[in-house]
Length: 390
Image (cartoon, rainbow, N blue to C red; front, side, top):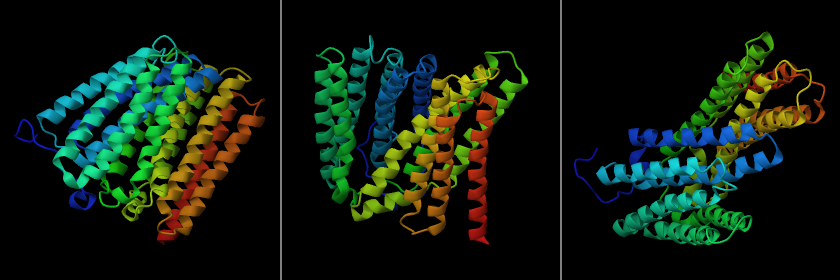
């Protein structure tokens, strides 16, 4: 920690800190999101229906956005002094309160969820105000974020005064405004580019967190029923699916989409960045789907909603992995990268067909087929990479 109790924010431009890694404070901060994701997954597991899925997505988005906002502020301005640490502790307490309100976030706890979200975003706005005050070079960028996020908070504050379901309409407007705010920073981001190593590492760490939740769901599914051959097979194949996702993601992701920011072109970067939101939701939902398959591993036919949850989540993951891989290799015009993306798309199409036509498939057979599709994609990825290197 910096020996001073407090110091003004410093601008961390990408080229100045090429080997920058996540700090211990950032890793500690991530722990509270482990709890938040676990609560979201628990909610979805308790209600595998269209409404349960809508609730899962609706509450996942603002939680992920809170994490991303803190991450991007830290990659540009963090100081790790006493003030920074205490402010991080306050943010963690607010996210914990946000997690408490997840269980009934679209019903009786919607007011509490809205209040805690406003509190979390208010802290970020204050941080940008401080950074802009002390760093004139960054002021155009920080002012842009402050205006966009403050206007979004206006919608959230209005939502606290109106009943449901109108409240959720204002939430949606607020989130839409926040998500489009970075699109207008092209010329500003060209001058202040986030760290090319730090941002991909932070996104990768969040992906690991969600993958960990998938493994936890598998273990919980097995412990909640008597072990037998079918449940162990489903659990094993479920873990292999998570391993396949890990392989496909970390063998392709890097910071190359950030390079587009230097030219003021935000489209590729934003696509790459926001794809991680859908990947995180897909990974968490896949874990829930595997857990339910383990629970129903002995049945002949899987309930329709649980088949669609599992296959739909895996399909989303494979589609997003294709997009992330494509945006990563697009600058280098890497032909192999495009081919590997099409392999992922092919696997996604196969799993989607299983969701549509797999009405007669048992949980064991369904999991086996999905796991095989993922493992074949990994094998094709490995073969293509090996061929390119030879």
